[in-house]
Length: 332
Ligand code: NAD
Ligand code: DAU
Image (cartoon, rainbow, N blue to C red; front, side, top):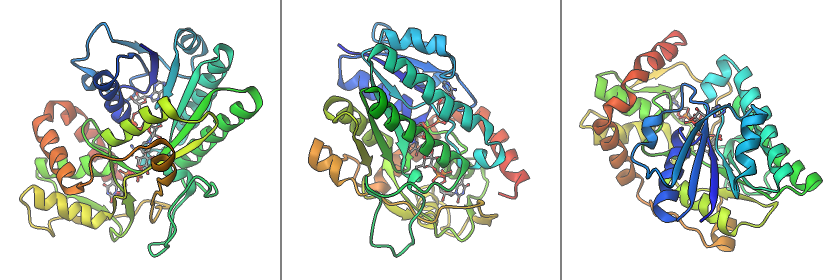
């Protein structure tokens, strides 16, 4: 039984990972999470008490971090400020958590020789043209566009430097856009689903031509566990499930799944610096570590997700009005 520390385990992908680990391994999980607006303890309900501990704390707090990392076999680092639109409004927390927080964890991993896996994003590579035949791979140069993605890129580079300079036992993964249960209603897919539930028309930034490469959060979790078990120290692995769709297609699918006319959406003000297209080539992870995704049917995964938000209104209701007020003030 390994003792894992999962930072950001009360957030969207972190909580999916914690449920995945409890279900598929014998490991013990300690979640370290600050419970910002994005953290929700309800996402961790029902976990067995002997396998799971929750600690409320900030990853920039060196004493809390050190105490937990000293007792862990491995750290899986999800905690971050994660939303591009927030980073355009107020970048500072992104610098604190994504840069200083990652630095604080790396220093603890260095002191205690603890295995470290860093969760990152495909956004560090910038964006692609719609007709570019290439996809992002591990050798694509870094070229982030937003305050969010630039702080994630900075955190990746810190991890690489701590591996090379100090011998920290770390791996990195960069994943594409996740969907599934427990995602905050500020994000694209949950925002549109909960809009329809509330009788609000879905909101598409600009023309809706921007492409994202969707992967179910459950597949992201299985990939991270594979890297933790079999990944080569110092290596980066891209995680993706060949799920490219433009935003208009996704909105039309949501409307269709929810019994609405396919044109019942509004175009709103575009995001500043909006990345056009992300697309992942995950050949290295598949061929070297033998991973493959289980959710290959996006429409079926999206239908499950719609059902989850319909069935869990109490999980998201308290955040919805504030999120819509934030967007309305920006014409979005
Ligand atoms: P999220 O915003 O849903 O959750 C972030 C969690 O981190 C929250 O529980 C929050 O309380 C916690 N947190 C924030 N600041 C903290 C701090 N200073 N100390 C401790 N905890 C803190 O984010 P998410 O979408 O689940 O993303 C998790 C990770 O995965 C991030 O590193 C993100 O960059 C990466 N990622 C996300 C996606 C995606 O599609 N959502 C894709 C690829 C990579
Ligand atoms: O690619 C991985 C990244 O995916 C992660 O690193 C980020 O943490 C995660 O938030 C996500 O970033 P995006 O900016 O791609 O996700 P978001 O859900 O904010 O938006 C997805 C697309 O939908 C994007 O093109 C913007 C658009 N959009 C978003 C919202 C909230 C809309 O058209 N309307 C909306 O209301």
